[in-house]
Amino acid sequence: MAESPKVLEKHIQNLRPMAMPAHLEEVAKQLFEEVCCGSRSLWPLDPERLKEPDFRASFYRLVHDGMWAAQERFLNRIGNGEPMVPGEEALYRMAMDTIAWQMMQRQLCYARRFYRGQRQPSLNNSNLKSVVTAARQLRNDKPDSMPLIADLTTFLQIGDILLADPHGSPAIIEVKEGQRNQEIGELARFYRQSGCERFKQIVSETESKHTVKQFERMLRQMDRMDFAADLLGGGKAKDPDSDQEILIPEPFLPIEDWDAELNGLLEEAAEKAWAINVIDECLFVGAYAKHMLPASPIAFVGWLSEFSGGEFIPAARLIDSVGQPLALPLFAVPTSPERMMDLLFGRLHVCTGISIPGLVEACQKNGFVVRPPKNKSERKWVHEMRGEAIKYEGQAVVLEKNGKSVIPAAGIFVRSLFHFQRPLSFINAMFDNP
Figure 1: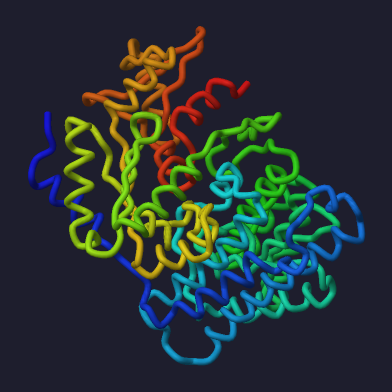
Figure 2: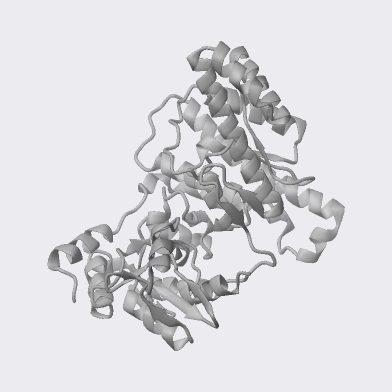
């Protein structure tokens, strides 16, 4: 059944070209240089040299110097008192997100554990000043480190500072402001170290409601910080909010990307105004420039609809990654700086979308049995999934291969559209995960 005209019109509206204000381009170039190119003086970089202690120390110092300069640029912009123009805050936050993604080696499996689905605090929140002071003190004490302030990003929601230290594992730091908060923090730390339930009961019975509420909040935050630290350090931890055991598989499961196809599309579109491609028979990508920009949403939706029979999720623009907490920032897109700026400032426009019939057919061609849930147990599995299940013809999709069953969640689309992972490669990795 084809999509209704009303639904198609919604897709078209969602795909209309969008761009950052042109006068921010020089700022964007400066931020990119600081965040991504701090080690430029050592390029071309021989990875083998990173095994040499002196070279590795120089490399990390330069990288962190650049990142720190970008963060200071953002803080100075916040502090100058002038209102930010539309898009400016998003640009700076994107730069901070790029730092965080580099700390996490661009791994979504780590980044998503720091995001709790909350709205980030205002840049004028009262706690920011004390966190800035703490970050600058950390940087002063460890000049080769990078203390990233969580509130400046779109997705770091555990702890106040994520500290990258070349001499150890990443650390999550909470900054307590005020004498009373420090005292409550001591109570929380004592309880966690002792495990004494009687102590917790005494606190709840003898302290004010505000103190008890703050005590409980600190305990939850400490649990989340331990969870994130354990996951970063060992790849295994229990999420204190969902009570689910999270395991990052070892060994690392490689997933193929479509970086080369993206760059080919961008170059072709820059030359002849448009280019299209289909990845794994289901991921549709269109790149547009020049005179094709105004018509690009209509052209793309018409093309995707023709091959999807109405069974595709809302398509996305590549620039939608700006402000999306778990999308790879445009500064981390695997393309040239010139093309990044073209994407940010509206000279290039990329539309993407998934054809569900195409995905089903590609899975079948690659040896998967594709079917709906067949019993009460599988329907319960769908109901209890952390993400929404992929649906085809109104029912959740179950994939079977070699005696193993998997119900893929819609999170695969985030990976395909915003992390440039090939859909079939990711599905195969799901089955290879022990």
